[in-house]
Figure 1 (cartoon, rainbow, N blue to C red):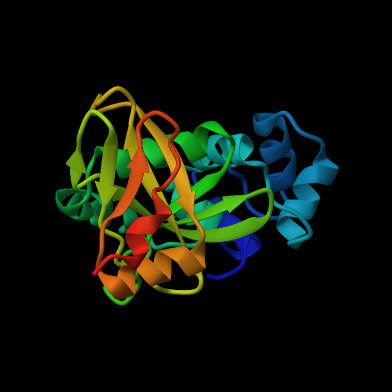
Figure 2 (cartoon, rainbow, N blue to C red):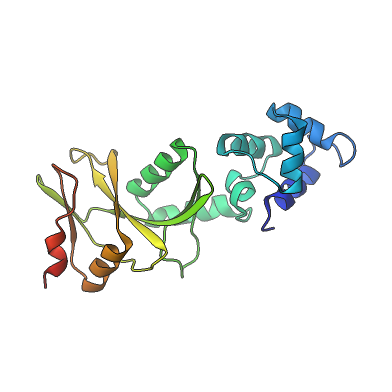
Length: 205
C-alpha cells in the first residue's frame, strides 16, 4: 500500500473502534482527532496527510504502527527494528530523536543494499541519512570513518559534546566531500573547539 489513503482505509476497516464506511466513519475519526470533517475527507481522498503529531495520534487510535501508517513500511517494522538495534549505536538513536523532536518522520532502512541508516521526511522533503559515530576521540578532535559515497545519501557525523556518550552535535558533510573521504579511506576529522572539519586530511595518503 504505497498511498497513505489506502493504509488509512485499511486500518479503519480493521479497527473495532471505527464504524464501517457510510456509517459515520469519517465523523468518528474527526471527533477523535479533534479536526474538521473536511480535513479527514482530504485524508481519505489522498489530498493531504496529517502532520507528524496528528499522524502519531491517529496511529495510536487505530492500533497500527506509526511508521507503517506514515511511510508505508510493513507491520513487521517493530520486530525488524529490534533486530537492527544490535548493529546500531546511541548516536543514531539520538539523531532519530532529534528529527522527531523537530516534527519530522523517520523510517529505519532495512535493505542490505541501502547505504543509508534512515529515511527522513521533513516539511515534505525526503532525505536519506547515514549517521557516523567517532572512531577516535581526543581532547582536541574526533575522527570518523565515512563509508558511503552514494550521491543521494547525506552523511552526518555525531560529534560528542564534552566527550559525553549521550549528548551530540550533528555535523552534515557535503556529499562530494563525503564521497572523497570514503574513496580515499582516510579519517574525517572534526575539531572539538570549532566543530569544523580539518579538510586537509582528505589529501593525506
